Structures are given as C-alpha cells and as structure tokens.
Length: 380
Image (tube, rainbow, N blue to C red):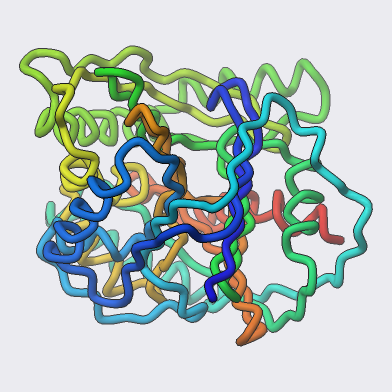
C-alpha cells in the first residue's frame, strides 16, 4: 500500500493551504518519461476531473518535451512524477497545525564537488557562452548526507517556521520525502488566466534596515542580475505564447524586488490568457522544465547542464502543487529543499545559480551556499 502525505501551508501568495493524506488513486512516472507517459497521464486526469489532485514532477520528467534523453540517475532514486487523488483533503486558512517542538538529528551535508571543481565546470560553461551555444544557464551542484530521520515531517515544520517561504511544502511518497522552502511560483491558473513568476537575482539581507535597503537597491540596479532576469522573462513569454490566446502574453511586473527572511530576490511576473478547454499537460509541454531552472536557449542549456552536473536533479528543479476541482491549479519551483530517501538513509540538497558571461565563479559559489543556509542553519 502506498503511503502519501502532502502539506502545502497557507500563504497570501498561494491563497490557501492544503493537507492531503492517503491514496484513492495515483499515476506514477518512473524513469525515462516519454510523451506517451504524459498522454496516459492526460487520460488519467480526465478520469478524475472534478477532484482534488496533488502532484510532484521531477526535472527530468520534462526532458521528452525537449527531445533530450536522461543519462544520469538521481541519488535519492525518487520516481520522476507522482499524481495523487487523495483519500482525505483539508483546505487550510491558517497554519495552526504546525508543531515545531520536535528535536532534530543534525546531518552533515557535504558538497559533491569542491569550490575548485565547481569553478572548473563553470570555466567549461563559460566557453559555451563565448561560442554562443547558450546565453544563460542554471548550473546546479549538490550537498548530500547519510542520515536517519524518523520524523522528517516534523523537521519540515521546524524549517518552515524558521523560514516561512510562500511556496513551501512537504511531500511524502512511501519512503521518499521532500522538505521544501521554495520562494518561487512556477505556474498558476485561475479561470482563463495563467501567471508565471520566475526568480532571477539574489542578494543577502542586511544587518540593519539601512544596509538592508541599500542591498535591495543594489540588487535592483545590478546589470548582471537584470540581464539574467530579462532573458528568462523573454523565455517564459515565448513558452507561454505556445498555449496563450493570441496577443494575451504580457509582462505584469519586471524586476520586482521581494524580501524573504534570509534573502532579497528579483521576481518578474508574466501572464497570459488560455482557452477554457486547454489541457494542463499541454501547458506543461509548453513551459516545463521552467525557464528559471534551465536557460537560453532552453534545450541546449538543459543538454549541457545534464552533461556537466554531477547527478540528475530528480525532484529538485521540478514542481509540486495541486489541481483544484474547478481545474484551476498552482505549482511551485522545487528549490531550497531537502530530498530524503528513508530506505537508503540518503539526503540531498540541490543548489544553483544563473550563469552568464558576466558571472564570477567565486560569487556564484558563495550564492549557492547562501541559498543552502535556509535549510542548514535551522537544524544546527
């Protein structure tokens, strides 16, 4: 019997929270996901139309949309995708169910590559940028640990309380767990409207209000961060145009600066209108994997990162979310997360940053570790 639990906490950005338990029915992607698998998923979704559906999709499950073959494995061995009609559903209007009193066995996460090795890979990517193979990409590295958590759900609650990210969530499928503190929305549908909100641009918080405000202004006017952001906005506009009604793609906000407990982020919002009968699988075909975790042009960027990165990404860089009975949906970008396989006693943290010709390898390495602190510090 499959074990399933999903908790997406309430946030003003998402507008509701969810706790779902048990499996009424499910559709699971294994390795080497194909277009046929997505077509079969569409049939399954039609069968359960009008029900709450929770889902998680790994990064490589979208490779078939780009005609790319996955040659690497994820060390946590999680399935590439899980779509669940739950037995029990509770819609939350607050987060009173959070309990943060549990103790934590602190794991020691070590990098799969050193700073020198990381910079060596970035020099190879720099050569591709110089040749014009790509203009921007998202290179990811990983931290991993042997660990034995008996209460990962309670640990996620502790992490979330320390860093209440708007698109956080917890997912358990059998012995696979995801503890996610994502600040980023991938894609949302309300009625006929679709919005996507890519993050590109990150800076630390200041130690006092004056310094904090200075850092926000620094991020807003930083040429590299603005170039990164606008390139991904153009990519998202192009992706959405494949399913949008004619002339409806618009940039609602460009270079918005948003503040989180540990970081400031630059977030842009792209929106469009779609036909009432547009299938969610067609929307995924057009937009997934998401622009902020791929690069420009998307296919070549994904091919090269799969070549240079030390592991398949798995659930990291994928998406988790829900489909409402109305057909509206909301999906995050799985970043700032711990992937944990309780059977293998293996945990993984993925961290990455945008790479352009203006990138400084040391700064990119530091940015990756800065992002990881939201997961590591609260467990200390």
